[in-house]
Image 1 (tube, one colour):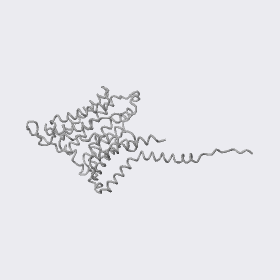
Image 2 (cartoon, one colour):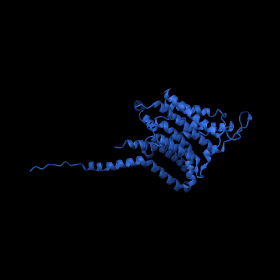
Image 3 (cartoon, one colour):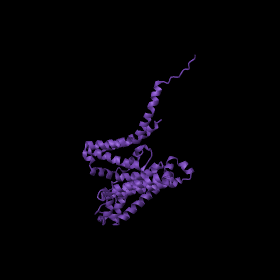
Image 4 (cartoon, one colour):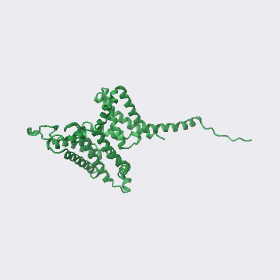
Length: 349
């Protein structure tokens, strides 16, 4: 009798086949939840190092510290969604700080007028950015970088390069007649119901509005479609240039709102108010790519990124880390988060 032979399957191949599903599940889990796990670990570590970190007052301080560049990061999310970038947001915010102070302190106008002027200026700067990028065809990095330097210079002109506060001495020895209005200061220093800082509430409201626009409306789907493939979006009838213009207008307007909140917090027009707003805002928005492994700009990830940066700076300060070490750590975290999210996801399968 002849017997049929059954081919032998190498043991190593069977083991690899069994290990592969587990490996894939681990990668998916790591990409989706890895950043949140790191954030929770740091939260526990900072509290273990110094229990004051966990006190409610300090936690509110962390949220308050994230508000200004969190708002700016939500604004720059729109250019990022369409595969662009707005480098002028920090300068626009600083301009809002100076202009709001000038309108109320020097011109003795109301806080409402100051808010409207700042928002219109932000929208106008965004429109100019959009025009340079969409119509003149200047690359977004170059157009917004040039606008950043231009606005930095403009913000110093009304005050002659000096900060503006109550009782400021103007050119010719004249004392400024106005002051910051109490209801304006409430936007940055007040608390709703005596508990929630008003600035935090403003940030959350902006985050909800951005989420609704980008995730629940046709406009948001078109924004994302343009970012994925602008040519394909144009072929299916999307007004690509209009949406790109709107992205920069929204970015400038929201940046101006961030400057208003900052002016209300500090209570004066400080010429150095811009500081690291740009880097912290861009960092928050980019960290958002790693939150839940979405690999694209999104308002939820942006807010988490802003809170993470504020928490990181707060915790490092409690550990008495010098400021230059804090900047280094921020850079390491940003690069590591993006490299982990994009690099590991490309090795899947």
